[in-house]
Image 1 (cartoon, rainbow, N blue to C red):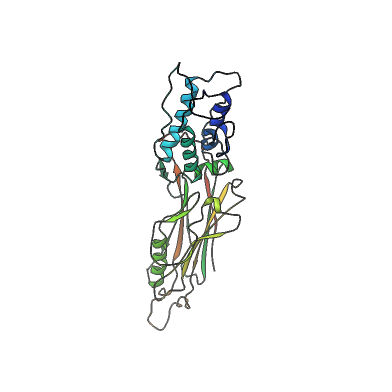
Image 2: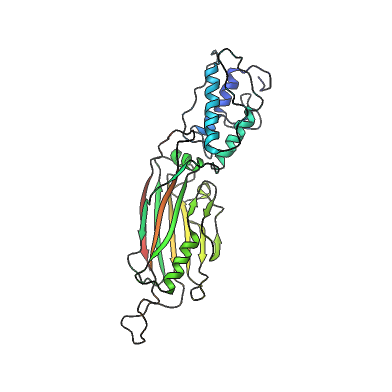
Length: 328
């Protein structure tokens, strides 16, 4: 039957409200994606790992409890995504006629758009402690310092659900120097300008500012990554002595998006200045470390969806690792 105001809902309509995988042209009488597809297992940019509601049989009577379970599920996802309050989810009482509601498709489509967008309005999130902290073995590298870290999920579905719910992978870059000299400061300032680099579902953000933006890949998110490294951000020092020195952040997946379980993030610090550290001792009365490079420090965090605003815990099963730590 067609999905229209004042019609009594049919079994196929109710099941469409749960399990539709398309919107627009009516499918199973419902012109919206179903709540199970939006927030249950889903596929691609849809799905949050929540427990699916059970479809009804062709001869079953749809109860007020089933109708209210749909409403509760929708309200829970609205609470997490923080979109505008839904208008179609007033509870039904036992004995009511379970009728089609005019705004239900609109509300489902709004929920679908929020989840597909990576739940950018979600604020039920918690930042982990440092999962990996990688420090260059020593000061004094002359060309590059490269550090790679990875984050792995229990399955490809769990990875999708994490990012769809507003989860992020965070990288920070800092330095360690026994005595901070000009070149150390140049690299420290680059790390400060990066700030918190947060990789979300559809985009990446930096909390820092300043320095020279050489490559801007911040429009890339997890769903844009491939199995080859792509640059998310490259900053060049605006220190007049070290304008060839850069820090660049890359990311890649271990398989095609939606099949991947691991994201690897790489930091490359480059000392392009035409100098190297002084030998010690030297005859010029100059500190041996004045042209030294610092130990670079890359730290990995996660920003993980929490369960105080309607979601239940899908258990993302996150592990992390240090992949490499080299200098040239």
